[in-house]
Length: 187
Ligand code: AMP
Image 1 (spheres, rainbow, N blue to C red):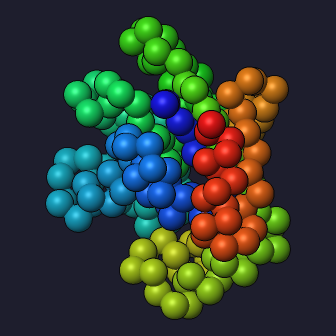
Image 2: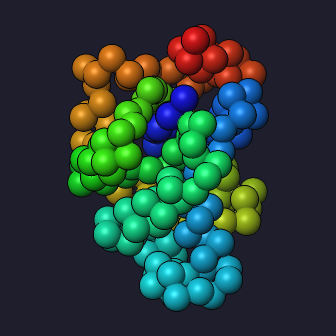
């Protein structure tokens, strides 16, 4: 399975991503985790992207595409993968298709975790207050990430609607309830 997991910040993508990857035995590829690791290691990539992460802005497409291209060519992706937090822009989505078709591959599922805007706001605010350990989960930055999602990522999600691989999943309920819905869609 080659899955993209779509959804707003606060929709529960990270949690569901881990469960899907365990169930389907595929690698979890989170561009956000990769960026945070690069920052923590203070690598060349890290110093390039740190400012964007701190501000809750998207890292430039070229940078993310390069990282994804590299990662998808690794051996563990041969039997499938799940992309979490990528693509985030229309450009990234188009370039992902090009990249995959160059590898003679296609996505098998685009799963969109749907959570109402008010709930996203509540979750974002409480995550910031309880301290997830993420510097971009604090009030203003977290809210800005939601704006960035609506402006730049929502149009990218539109591109998947109408494709056979697209599934909308109700993101409200317990973690397990949502996971069961996802598994049904992946059958
Ligand atoms: P996430 O953990 O997916 O919310 O990502 C955290 C941060 O990493 C984002 O706010 C962006 O700064 C950066 N990032 C992660 N994935 C992408 C992407 N596909 N395109 C651009 N920036 C990204």
